[in-house]
Length: 119
Image (tube, rainbow, N blue to C red; front, side):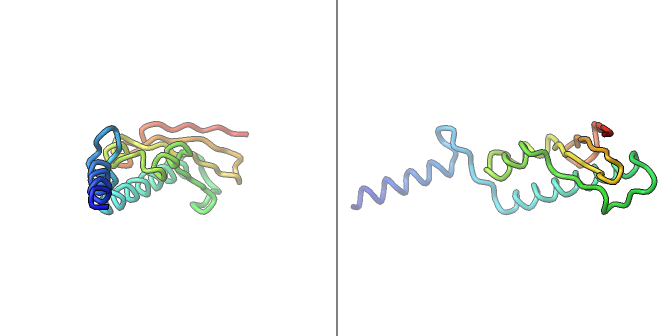
């Protein structure tokens, strides 16, 4: 039993240190920073949509979501703060205007690419 416990502790330590390709878990501070970057980029994207779509659209009419693949990777813990700092992609819709598209942001939330489609 003594050796089994030691082996379990050793395996746990190896997992936490990222040996053999295992990713280190993000700290609570990194999680908060990731969430802040997501929120900042989403807000920038929403503001860009409001500017480009034009009159008659309120902020409530604009729906912005983090790209599905990115969201899945973040939820699975596959993306680090460093990855998020490289930039994020969002999808947006304005059903009132029958328009949709995407926008990319840099690591600080600035919109770097904007795509708009109209049905």
